Image (spheres, one colour):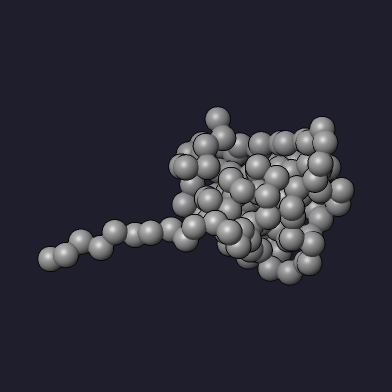
Length: 117
């Protein structure tokens, strides 16, 4: 099951990706283009040119998971410029999956409690 709360690192492939690629093709992109390890405890997110479909690739202790999402209406707010992989937070991933931009200007900044010693 897809649970963004369990992931520590999320990487987006900016720009469009050919989503005819499956596990082997996407993991090859992670290795060759991102220069990252597809077998690591990270999620790799890809989107098509029309921005209405995305795939998430992740490694689990003995195999890959490939999640696929297709919107019936609307578009993902996907970064259009190409370049290196973008590291985003779990919160940004949830915004993206909810149809929002990964840069929410009105969102409250995370607050971290400081423990006085």
